[in-house]
Image (cartoon, rainbow, N blue to C red):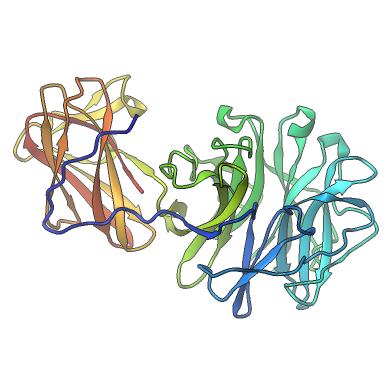
Length: 427
């Protein structure tokens, strides 16, 4: 059922938030995107056209052009047809290193392989006589990605495929030599599945560092439908411990259905502004297209434009109102007694880029239609109207606003009658 919308009276019209942009509108799952030289290169899980599909563009937003298969021949250890989640990086010697997942002939499980090329377009040539990592006892190993720390040390991240044999899954960190294919020392477990929404699956690890904090992106749940999503975990040290985010970063619901089953994410870090690239179901769930959204960092934590971030009202700055405990509200509390001319609740929110955003306000109103005024950064007010719900029945209304890049203050103030505020969400 559609949520009621806010009645908005504003001094100027505001556009709604910018949803993620569809860059490749055909099957291109698990995208890995990097800029090499003056061009962007994207690699994906195979879709019946070769082993490693690759596309190029002059800018991240495209247009993107598909190229020839980047890996014409797999390693002798692998069968074709199930080549997944490639990752391409450049080594210190200028050669390009490809990690890929393929089916091991010997074990019948998905395992990790490596290949080298002198061009990011390939053709990549397999390295070694066998797979790079292949443990049939843990269900095989998939979803390799590379990470280089500030000192130049290289690491391999991957997922054990425990869910393939009815076991929990883990994400691993493995030190490698400068060649990217010589394993050094013991691997370290970074995360393990366990939350209900994960359904026993965490995968597609991608690691980046923001300030002094390590941020590990990963997908969770079954990839085959709308429940697939992207989350993250953070740590003060490379090897952890990592703490999972309270809520996932991208879900079908957080994107208001603009992307279905967002997963397989990759981070593109650039001086002009970071982005998150990921796939989502298109064409009646018959293909996974490649999307991009603006990515920002609020105190070292990722925020994606177009995906809702919740701010609990009770954690704001309250004037002439109070927090009320109630089991029916998010986190068990809401802001009540916003009943006076000077009653306000102010919340700090974050925007990855300057521009249009949408604010969703969780509220209840028990004595007829109520109204608040909404301001951003002390600017002109718009009026938000709350249809009657009955107390302890929480609904949402929305208001479109303009935010500056970085920190903003959204303030709700009394205008007429009575409403309680549970939270706001900003997308």
